[in-house]
Length: 430
Ligand SMILES: Cc1cc2nc3c(=O)[nH]c(=O)nc-3n(C[C@H](O)[C@H](O)[C@H](O)COP(=O)(O)OP(=O)(O)OC[C@H]3O[C@@H](n4cnc5c(N)ncnc54)[C@H](O)[C@@H]3O)c2cc1C
Image 1 (cartoon, helix red, strand yellow):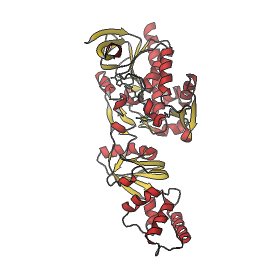
Image 2: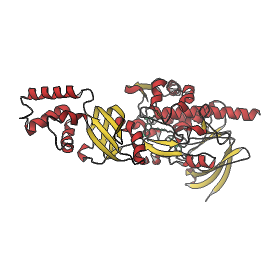
Image 3: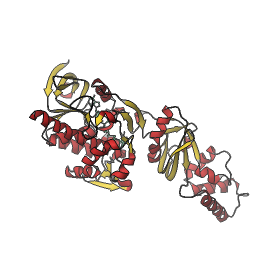
Image 4: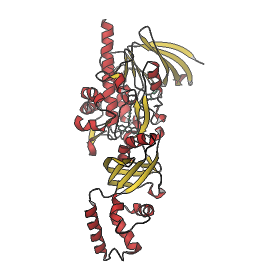
C-alpha cells in the first residue's frame, strides 16, 4: 500500500553523507529548521568504510600544500577551505566528543581509530540541534514552483512492515549532497546528477579516480605483495607525466595502494581517451644507477662471486637482498633476459603497460560532476537556480588519498549549510 503525505521546513538537505550531515549541522546551528533526506536506513554508510575502517578525517597540511592534492582546480575550494579548514574539522570533532590524532603523512584519524564513531557523533549532533532526520527516504524527483523546492520521496516505513509511502517535502532552500558514483552499495548512485540537470545544470564527464590500474601483462604471483619506499612514474603516450614515491600494493585488480591511487586520476583519463599508459616501477628510488651498480658489485664480492660465475642460486640470493623475497619470482618471470649487467636498469625501470582500470564499484572517488563554474565558490550556491546549493563529491572536485576528500566534503558542506541559512534569514526578513 502506498500512502501520501507532505512536510515543510526551511532547508532540505538531500544526502546524509559527510557533506550533507555537515551542511545540516551548520544550517541548524544558525537556527534553521532543517530536514535531511537519506535513502539508506542510516546516515554515513560510506564513512564506515573510509580509511580502512579508521576514517582519515582530514590532513593537517597548510593550504599551500593541501591545495596541490585537489583536482581539477583547488581555487574553487579556497573560500570553503578558509571558512572551515582542516583545523576547524579537528576542533569540530573534538567539540562533539570525538578526539582526533595525527599520524604519518599529516593524516588525521579519530583517536578511537573507529570510522563508525564518525557518523555516530554527527548524527548525535544533528539530533541535538533538532534536524529532522528522515532515513530510508529516497528522493525520486525534485520540482520548483511557488518559490519552493518539492522533493518527492519514496519512504520505507520499517515499523509498518516495509510499506512504501510517497512523501513530498517542501522548502524554499535546497542543498544537494548526494555524492558521486563510487561504491554504489553505500548509496552513492549518481541520483544528484539527474536532480541537478532537472534544475538547469550540466554535468562534467565523470570517471573513477583513486582506483586500481590493471597491467596488460600481470603475473598473478604479484598479487598480495606490498612494496614500501618505491618510486612509480606515469607515462602517457611515452611522455613522462608524474613521478611519485611511496607504497603500492599488487591486488587481484592490479596496481593500487597510495602510490598507484595517486597516479590513477591521470591514468584513467588517458585510458578513456585511448592513450597509451605505462607505469614504471623503481624498486630502488634512493639509489642512482651508479650507486646501485656499486651496491650490486659489493653484494657479489661479499658472496665471493663475480658477475661471470654467479650461478642461478646466488643470483636469486642477490635478488632477495634487493627486494622482498615474494617479489623475486615474478621479477625474474617478467624480465626474461635478466643478467647482472642489466639488473640495475631493470630494478629501476620495471615497465607495466596499463590496459584497464577498476570502475566505480571499487573506486575511492568520482572525478567530474557539477562544473565548478556553475557554482559560486564563496557560497556553494547554484548560478543556474536561485536558493539551490551543492556540497561534497557531487561537485567536480576530488582529492588524493590522505584525508583530502573528506575535508572537501566538510568544507563545502559547512559553507553550503551556512550560506543556505543566511539565505533563509534574508528570505524571512524580506
Ligand atoms: C573505500 C573508501 C575509503 C575512503 N577513505 C577515505 C578516507 O579515509 N579519507 C577521505 O578523506 N576520504 C575517503 N574516501 C572518500 C570519501 O569517503 C568521500 O569523498 C566522501 O565521503 C564524500 O562525501 P559526500 O557526502 O559528498 O558523499 P557520500 O558519502 O557519497 O554521501 C551521499 C549520500 O547521499 C545519499 N543519497 C544519494 N542519492 C540519494 C537520494 N536520491 N535520496 C536520498 N539520499 C540519497 C547516499 O545514500 C549517501 O549517503 C573514501 C572512499 C571510499 C569509497
